[in-house]
Every structure is written in structure tokens, then in C-alpha cells.
Amino acid sequence: QVQLVESGGGLVQPGGSLRLSCAASGRLFSINVMGWYRQAPGKQRELVATITSGGSTNYADSVKGRFTISRDNTKSTVSLQMNSLKPEDTAIYYCYVRGSNGIRFGDYWGQGTQVTVSS
Figure 1 (cartoon, rainbow, N blue to C red):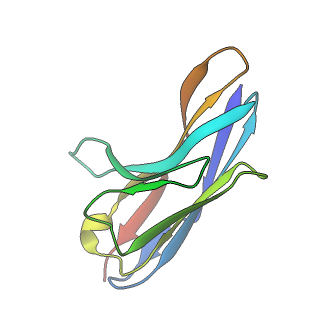
Figure 2: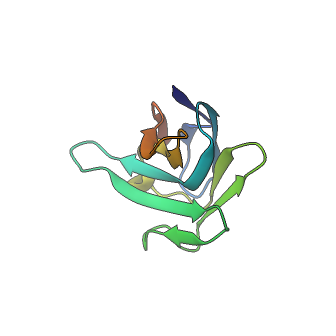
């Protein structure tokens, strides 16, 4: 069993900042990719940012220059620093991990944390 626990969501004004964190635990022996996806009301879930175990990052064009993803391999955590937030960043943000349980690789998701950008 793999658990992903997210924290850090909330309400922020446009132009503000938030930091999301996610900790992975359980039967997870190696983690390849960690990242964040988001889903706004009435829209499909979309990639926000990912980071590999080697530190290579990938960002959605809409967040480049504003969001920064980082991870701590020793603690199996991933964070997303979100600056210059816009109302269109409002969504449920989901932590994502691709890793091995010792038998096969699988995709794991957190329960989601709400981010609301509004004045």
C-alpha cells in the first residue's frame, strides 16, 4: 500500500504565493518520477510539473517562470513553490508518483488539495 499525503493548499489573492508539499510512504521501494497535476472545474486533469530522480524537470507552459518543483529523495517528498498566482491557477492539485513496489512500476495519486486564487 502506497500513501501520498499532500499539504499546503488554500486561498490566496492574485499575485500571492503558496507552497504545496507531498510525502510518499508505504510499500514503495524506488521512485522514478514525482510531480503535480491539477484539475479545474469542468476541465480535464493536466500536468503542472514533474521531476525525475535525477532532478530533470518538466513544466506546463502556463506555469513556467512562476512555479518551481523540487524533491528530496532521502525523504520521498516533492514540493511545488507557486508564485505570482493567477485566478486561472485555481484547481485541485494532485500529487503524483511513479515508482516500484518491488514487483512492478505503478502510478500513484494523492487525494488532492484545493488551491483557490481570488480577491
